[in-house]
Image (cartoon, rainbow over all chains, first blue to last red; front, top):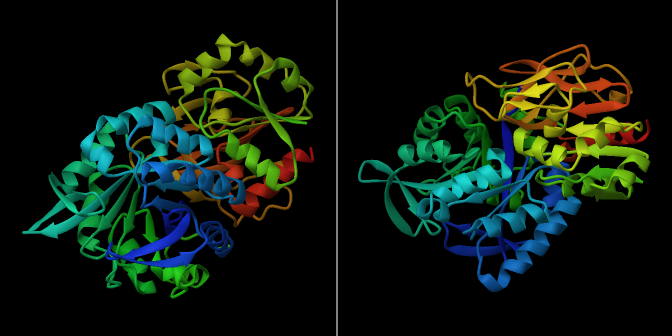
Length: 252
Length: 192
């Protein structure tokens, strides 16, 4: 049976791992390669690296880091952050990433999704959606959650699928950093509206949050950062717990 | 030397990295002599079937692949291109395996993406591999089960997780991305 995936996310700034608490405060949580290797040993199913600086001068630093990651780890990984063109994608894929994640640039230039899909395959394109519940509606936000858009989350998710996305990474800004659980409502709606895998993100704080997510939505994967970085929930313990709760999970 | 066939498929370097982690040197090449003189050949691939076959035939790499006498391992799209035909772009393929490649019906999420198991294994490729382990799949098309199927996976329906005919081996999953179990499978292939 296909397993639900547990995906640690590593936020990268200038080649180092950080985590934004509610997208604002930033703490240093270590060397990305060491952290990545530790997660692989612990049984992480995939890794996501989000470059949160993504300034032009630091782009080469990221590419060098991607090459090192590709040499060291033996599970799939996704790289996102600041990807604006097919040229950016090409550099990251050539450096050894399995997938790229695009967010603001996909909203600004939706055809980028199609361009990446036709050049590198659908499986390569993860469309990341930052969503916020405001005035009775789930809407799409861009630029790290700072800029609202008129897009409704469900509509954008469906459009991204039609354009060629192979997977969606859905982050609820209302839940992110709160450690009160995933946004079950919108994750359920999005995962049922599309026929591509959905990764849920934002709000993981306790092990039972993951069970609630997998029991109540069709999400295929759960992504989290700080609870893994700071060792609050060790991945082997989480996976054992989910297996005991009859969630289909890969245990080493 | 191990030859990794160079063509217009994505992320070929990940196979080279996996071999390097096992301590093996390899060369990514589309040179006939290099491919045919290699001890082992790997035919990897992530991409689209019709454009990949077009690329291979234009450079006569299809003929080179068919004349490989040493053990060859196709991975993912590599496996699909070793079948008779693919529904992806209505493509005539290399016809090493007597199976056709079809698109998954959309009764569950497609692509079949993530960790899944396999069963009904045959042959030395799977020696020492615990069948409770999962491997990493990422594909929207699947190869039917045929007499050359040496492992079966079930997603939406049973399909070929691995195939073998003589010196030609292939896996639908990605051993280079399947943690320790994938490394073991690559070691088994390299020991053939």
